Image (cartoon, rainbow, N blue to C red; front, side, top):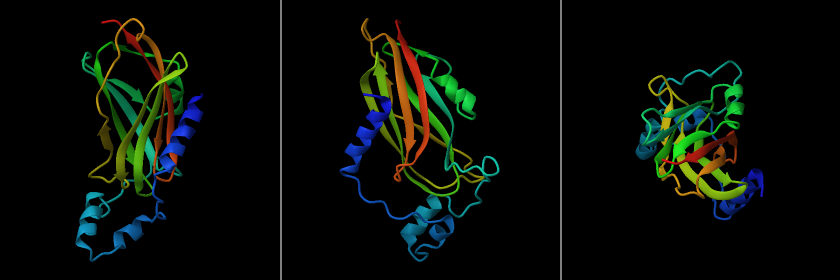
Length: 201
């Protein structure tokens, strides 16, 4: 099964139990929504709706979620491996690279991103991992809901749960990953093709 078919099958599974998402509201609508509701006012304040929103990354930028970088944090390495996702060239080069991870290492991903234009609800990081064309793992981590970034909160940073690299002769070798950032509206904000190589200690 191809990576795209994997994601389509995953979406079908999720849709069976997913509630219907209500219509999107503009930032101004959210700001004035139930102004007398104290609990809702606190929720809106936690999202930063009352602060100054940052300008777009560049004039005419239609992206709603801008993934700036992903860091691969490995407990056996002093420095994280950083994927710079600020340009298309770097993103395309990821698919041909393999980042080395020692077997039994503990690792996790740290994602830095910016939201613009509107509130994003139910943002998720979905990933399929394959070895020799066979699916070996699937990740579906919920990142949360976010308002457009402000001067006091220029970016968001989220760390995913830790994982342990497999070990043993059969587990070593190259792994390919396809990752997507998807929200409640099923909008895919970015697709990444990348990979790692599990090596002996």
